[in-house]
Image 1 (cartoon, rainbow, N blue to C red):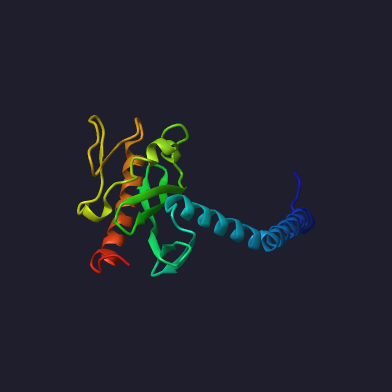
Image 2: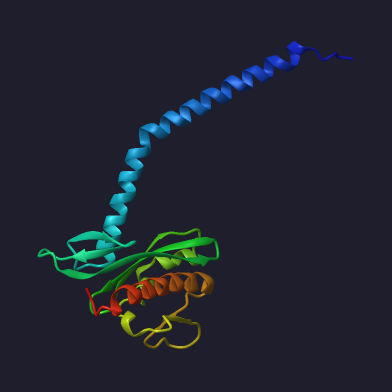
Length: 190
């Protein structure tokens, strides 16, 4: 029988400890080197998404947890809200633009963990465009999802095989509508 001694146990453990320390240091160094670039890229993506959901805006001003889109003269053209809904694969983060007249101007999915080929189709413009023009100012109960009938005002058609994702995006848009109504309808606009 082989006897266990301190050398046969501690030598591999010490090697493993050194490897762990080196890998941890390398990861920490990589994080330090890339942290600012990653934050910058995320900020750029968010700015581009705001331009997509509120196309009339030239700049944005952060206000009370959302953004106000401004034209070249500094006048408000609408509002941008970031919200989330519970999807099949976790949280679905959505950015919604609403014009000063209270209609939805655009919807972009910021992140999700939905199934490729099914729920991930929520990123497609053909799905997202269903929200455009919906009258956020008049939708007291929000937008609803329909499966088998042609959608009317205040409704969107669920994606085939992805009703949970369709509902998650819609719930996120409805949260944006609620924020808009709470912040701006009572004061009549800006």
